[in-house]
Image (tube, rainbow, N blue to C red; front, side):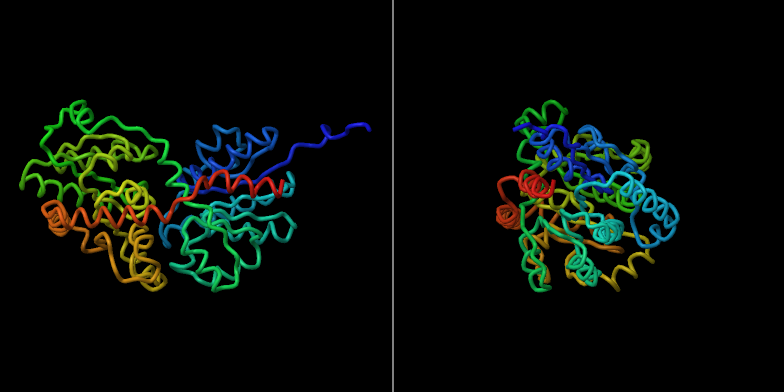
Length: 388
């Protein structure tokens, strides 16, 4: 028999990851897929991680990272242009499948388009429809071929809506498993920190807006904590944010945190002050006591209160306590409560009461165990291979 096999054109996968975290989570499965099928052509929207894997990016995450209801409206013409160009590229390239990662506003719109063209849609990291915009469930049911979720409670939530979701484990747990750190003693020595000092980590967020809104109050709280005893501060900066933004606030506050990687901050801190977002989930994986902060523009907050139906905003609490629970494992300070006095008061309660801190650590560790699965990346890649 003659073998014509090797003349098959390489398969094509369209990927849409509009945020830095989405780029990171998409890179795992794409890397696994390329191990099995190195000739696969990847194109779409992503960031540095997907580019390293050879993806052809039509737009990048730094162009797409837009936060808040008001900002999205302001950027609407740009987003419409992106969607138009992506659709043209899809028609031109005819991908064999689409991997959509999080980023629901654009991804659900694109899912409908793929569905019309008969291109299978694999949605990884489902939109947080359990938090708001529950009507998006209808779109997921109509347009998504495989829904791969990263929280176990989502399987039950979608089941109630007649959608089969597959829990693949949480990529954050997988990404953190490979990290290695020096001993605490070595870390303190290297950074010239008094070995008796308590360490408080500052994680002000990954978007300029968040940093402008929250970082000054974090630093004010740090100043208050410093007056109470021997405390040193670690600062996790987001790589995509211009360093001068941090410097301006640090100069004004007159406090000198030690800059290190966000994961070092999580690993070595006794307590974290953290802006709500993926970082609260990562911090949960490290089992670190934390105070979660969130503040947005007043108009965005009003709209948010009207549309979001959760009692808790942080993933640390949602994963620990369940979707609609009012219970909190870690305190959340929102809007006006994000002020130096309230933050430092909440922090002191945890820092100065070992029972509070250790109970928090235990509950976070239990929650982490529920997020685990062997390897989300391999699991998602296996699903992609079924369609390629």
